[in-house]
Amino acid sequence: MTVRLRVAPSPTGDPHVGTAYVSLFCLAFVRQQGGQFVLRLEDTDRARFRDDSEAQIYDMLHWLSLDWDEGPDKGGPYAPYRQSERLDTYRPHVDKLLADGRAYYCWCTPDRLQAMREEQQKRKVPTGYDRLCYGKTREERTALPGFSAAAVVRMLIPDDAPLTFTDVIRGEVNAPRPDDQVILKADGFPTYHLAVVVDDHLMGITHVVRGEEWISSTPKHLLLFDWLGWERPAFAHMPLLRNTDKSKISKRKNPAARLTWFREEGYLPHALVNFLGLLGYSLPSGEEIFTFDEMSASFDWTRVNTVGPVFDLDKLGWLNGHYVRELAPDDLVRRLLPFLHDAGLIAEPPTDRQHADVTAAVPLIQTRMALLSEAPALLRFLLVEEDSFVVDPAAVEKSIVGNGAVLAAAADALEPLEVWDTEHVQGALDGALLEDGMGLKRGKAYAPIRAAVCGSSISPPLPESLALLGKERTLRRLRALTGELVV
RNA sequence: GCCCCCGUCGUCUAGCGGCCUAGGACGCUGCCCUCUCACGGCAGUAGCGGCGGUUCGAAUCCGCUCGGGGGUACCA
Image 1 (tube, rainbow, N blue to C red):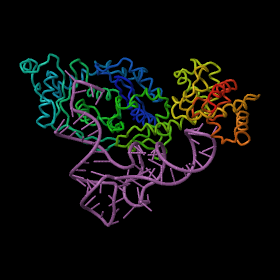
Image 2 (image 1 turned 90 degrees about the vertical axis):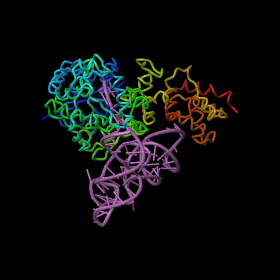
Image 3 (image 1 turned 135 degrees about the vertical axis):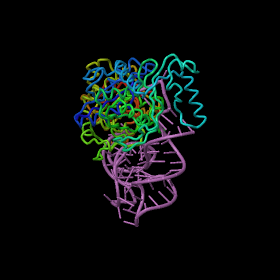
Image 4 (image 1 turned 90 degrees about the horizontal axis):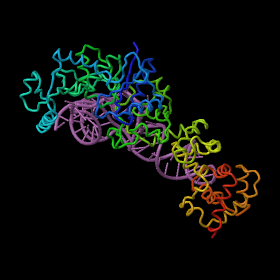
């Protein structure tokens, strides 16, 4: 029997990091077992529906190479994969439950339900529907208060509803006793609870993998599977990703809750995948740097933790830096180009000169960034339009004031160079400024030059930087600051 | 309020009764390398929430307690 798992995001806004997290674990298992992974859109909430969300979900999962075998975009034997297009498939099951006496119509208004809950809370009893509508015809109900013309359908939860189930991550789990849950809304759409059960069964899903937040509604699903005469799937409730304050990760408190944020900030997709695999999970080998295939090969649900991990950006940054350093230089160049363009440093597409400059400079900055978005600051001195070049005032204050003589000496030493490369530049500089020249230590000598030419007190190695910059710009920047600042 | 889940360094984790005076990683601190910043190398810092049991022996099992989280919707 082949394993079939699914991820079921709701297109309600920016794709959520939890979708990628759950997808990764599903896929690790599916690929190991040779099963299928289904992408299903749970778009039954018309109020929160966002039009562009679906395309973004595809985009981000593709970016992460978390690919599905069946879905709304690629079809499959159980199409359609959008719940909004499956409305007809839910209705017969509702009718069956109604006919079997497992569900009933309810005409209560939202106001009445809210008042009822408030009153229950005041009395310190569990909140839940009071079954005012149960067993009544529409006509009988009309006479009572809080009547609404549009009816919903509710489950009739029996006293002996099963509350225990086996979770492949947690073992035996006790879940709370459910309320008479609405399964069909007044607008004719099913609620998540009905739709998920019907679709999971019809699509042959063998393992329901979802966030821990769903544990409390699992008994409703159990009941539905049983009532409809369907075999229950296996359940795996993943730990919830957390904000720093331990609350469930949210877009409001944490930029990392939005998947698009990672790409915008210059994280590498395989770094993010590796990091997500580290949250609530560890490989048997103890290795922390691993690929999807390595994770998949040894994947085991029982190794998934039950505690919700805090999403630690520091560690992700370190991992990203590791992967940046591992990139082939031309690959890094390709990934850097969009960031340099967004910073206004290069054209789109880049000129040959710009492309050559970036290619030559990449080896100098590869160990100097954790995120791709840090590249513009590192390469600004090289790529900026000459008349836009400015020296950071803090660097002027710190390294240039009082060192005009060093700049002048450096310019004089570089001026006659015929061959302009790292070796010759460094030779000229050292000859003029170190023991055979001004008698300075290299650190002392290079600081003002670095500030004047690179515009900052931090830069890639100096001789290499000057070699890339070229003689003309180097001398112009040195001369621009020599005169007025000599003490 | 009611119900459920969970509890090892600041963070991610290893541990599944003796191998633990608790291991690794990130972070942080110091040192080395060094033209700045990084990278790299080395060292250090810091934890089994608490209290009772069970046991010859508990981070590992049980109970209570405290703490955290989630659910409690015609949202998913």
